[in-house]
Figure 1 (cartoon, rainbow, N blue to C red):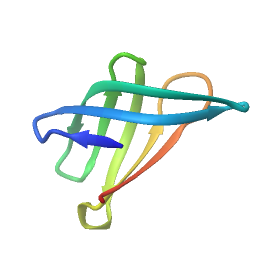
Figure 2 (cartoon, helix red, strand yellow):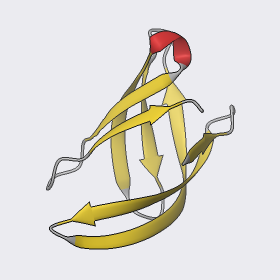
Figure 3 (tube, helix red, strand yellow):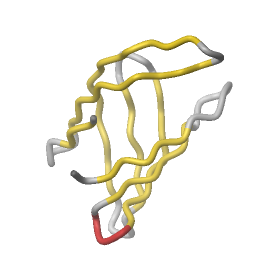
Length: 79
Protein backbone atom coordinates (compact mmCIF):
# COMPACT_ATOMS: atom_id res chain seq x y z
CA UNK A 1 0.00 0.00 0.00
CA UNK A 2 1.27 3.45 -0.87
CA UNK A 3 -0.15 6.78 0.21
CA UNK A 4 0.61 9.93 -1.77
CA UNK A 5 0.12 12.94 0.49
CA UNK A 6 -0.63 15.44 -2.27
CA UNK A 7 2.33 17.67 -1.38
CA UNK A 8 5.22 15.53 -2.62
CA UNK A 9 5.50 13.10 0.31
CA UNK A 10 4.54 9.42 0.42
CA UNK A 11 4.52 6.42 2.72
CA UNK A 12 4.59 2.77 1.67
CA UNK A 13 4.36 -0.73 3.10
CA UNK A 14 4.84 -3.81 0.92
CA UNK A 15 5.97 -7.42 0.72
CA UNK A 16 8.85 -8.28 -1.61
CA UNK A 17 9.83 -11.64 -3.05
CA UNK A 18 13.38 -11.80 -4.44
CA UNK A 19 14.85 -15.18 -5.39
CA UNK A 20 12.45 -16.90 -3.01
CA UNK A 21 13.26 -14.67 -0.03
CA UNK A 22 10.16 -12.95 1.34
CA UNK A 23 10.54 -9.67 3.24
CA UNK A 24 8.22 -6.92 4.45
CA UNK A 25 9.16 -3.26 4.18
CA UNK A 26 7.86 0.14 5.25
CA UNK A 27 9.34 3.41 4.07
CA UNK A 28 8.64 7.05 3.36
CA UNK A 29 9.56 9.00 0.28
CA UNK A 30 9.05 11.88 -2.06
CA UNK A 31 7.56 12.26 -5.53
CA UNK A 32 7.06 14.80 -8.29
CA UNK A 33 4.49 14.83 -11.09
CA UNK A 34 4.88 16.77 -14.33
CA UNK A 35 2.00 18.34 -16.32
CA UNK A 36 2.12 15.38 -18.77
CA UNK A 37 1.48 12.90 -15.90
CA UNK A 38 5.05 11.56 -15.86
CA UNK A 39 7.22 11.95 -12.81
CA UNK A 40 9.61 10.39 -10.37
CA UNK A 41 9.46 8.86 -6.91
CA UNK A 42 12.09 8.03 -4.31
CA UNK A 43 11.79 5.63 -1.38
CA UNK A 44 14.09 7.44 1.01
CA UNK A 45 15.19 4.70 3.42
CA UNK A 46 15.60 2.04 0.75
CA UNK A 47 17.31 4.39 -1.70
CA UNK A 48 15.01 3.28 -4.53
CA UNK A 49 14.34 5.64 -7.44
CA UNK A 50 11.46 5.21 -9.88
CA UNK A 51 10.25 6.83 -13.08
CA UNK A 52 6.45 6.90 -12.95
CA UNK A 53 3.48 7.68 -15.18
CA UNK A 54 -0.12 8.25 -14.08
CA UNK A 55 -2.65 6.48 -16.32
CA UNK A 56 -6.31 5.39 -16.43
CA UNK A 57 -7.69 8.81 -15.55
CA UNK A 58 -5.53 9.08 -12.45
CA UNK A 59 -6.50 5.71 -10.94
CA UNK A 60 -3.26 3.88 -11.70
CA UNK A 61 0.47 4.60 -11.51
CA UNK A 62 3.03 2.54 -13.42
CA UNK A 63 6.70 2.75 -12.53
CA UNK A 64 10.12 1.26 -13.16
CA UNK A 65 13.17 1.41 -10.94
CA UNK A 66 16.03 3.45 -12.41
CA UNK A 67 18.83 2.28 -10.10
CA UNK A 68 21.51 -0.16 -11.33
CA UNK A 69 20.87 -3.82 -10.55
CA UNK A 70 17.65 -5.84 -10.62
CA UNK A 71 14.71 -4.39 -12.54
CA UNK A 72 11.69 -3.63 -10.36
CA UNK A 73 8.36 -2.55 -11.79
CA UNK A 74 5.33 -1.30 -9.86
CA UNK A 75 1.63 -0.99 -10.62
CA UNK A 76 -0.26 1.06 -8.03
CA UNK A 77 -4.07 1.06 -8.35
CA UNK A 78 -6.45 3.34 -6.51
CA UNK A 79 -8.66 1.43 -4.08
